[in-house]
Length: 188
Image 1: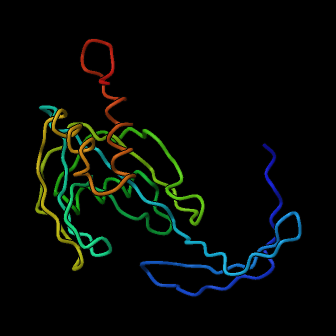
Image 2: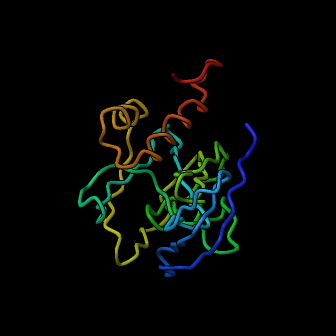
């Protein structure tokens, strides 16, 4: 499919804060239709990390999320700072949210999280040989508990809806597919 030519007629930022940048555009479609108030959330993107301990356990978090007003499982994740490389962000977020550090970070996938209304991309990493080296260093708005679970339990958490976000659920399955189970086949 050829990319249609949408023409931005005007643009203004209606929210511009460290937590969100929201742009309101007026767009002209190829047939001449004008779409006013087309909102786009701008972002540097974010990382999600599935960290494995030396004994093959997955490091997961249980977090309170104000927007959903609920507590659920997640993987360590966070926003990429300006001029920060995705892997550096993944390392930082793993350390800050869980106190774990890992030797290797393998890039697994990069995908738009919500391409209809955002330019934000999720950078998914698999971290191996993760060890707890410090206490978590949480932001004031973060309420996080860390635990280690088996890969079977991780799969169950992703499957039965205990995983809080769809991007984390997708990251679980993408990473599980990339983990070799020692026989030359991948976990399915």
